[in-house]
Image 1 (cartoon, rainbow, N blue to C red):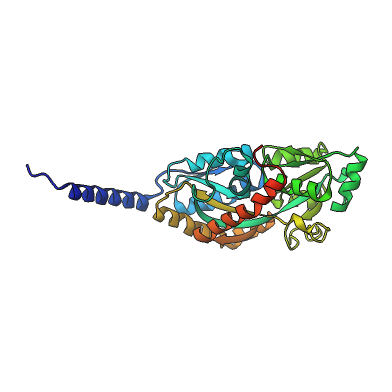
Image 2 (tube, helix red, strand yellow):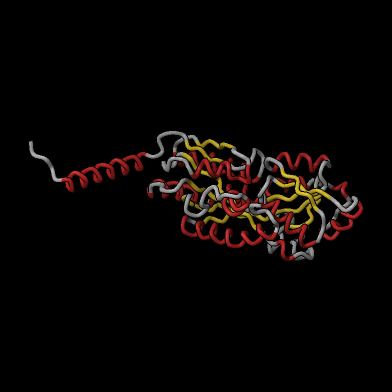
Length: 325
């Protein structure tokens, strides 16, 4: 029996594996796809994930399941996706918290937010909203110091969780106003808004998405948005610069990422589907109703967005003393 040279055997094996991988990519998807949301149900990320899940399922021909995995500043869900098989069946609704903020508040970096993910596409951006319960007697950002004084020199503000962009903005506001503001973390925006509406906490800070109807109905008072321009959905709410605090500028991005090493054909299928979905007038209108500006960019540009956010927010995390002790 003639033995094939080792090099020929290796080349044959590589060719066979490549052919298998290409065939698998061409057939993808063959089973349901899961989108991990790093916050609880009802928050901004959860809403965006569910808005894109249905049309994504219709385009790809398989169910798309939204799976909420909150905790540890978004890093619990982030770790699950970073360590998942790179087959395209586990994705993440990515945003500033699990990528640009949460990992850097821990003593040990749980994953590399840039290189340990395949960043597929950004789908939108949204400002943070600083808001108050109407009974708290706070009608503007400049009323907060007076309210803190009336409360005995101490007041709490709620956010969607430890290491969230809401906490970052709150800690920056605390430093800027030189006030004793206590962070009250929640497991997502929904439980935080419930306590804010009930008056359990006087202030809340979160991505604008879920709170537009509450402000419009007068259930909450919008104090400021952290974007450079006013939100078209809440035009009566000033920007932080207009309110006298320009250093509080902060935008949150929304996108879809997966584990590292995903096959290029699978990435392209997801990217193309997301680009088409975000371009649909009905989806764009729904995003805008939620306070999110549709803003599609592909893999390379989205990776650059993540890198820039990390550079911008790392100093803010250190200044707010949110990093490892």
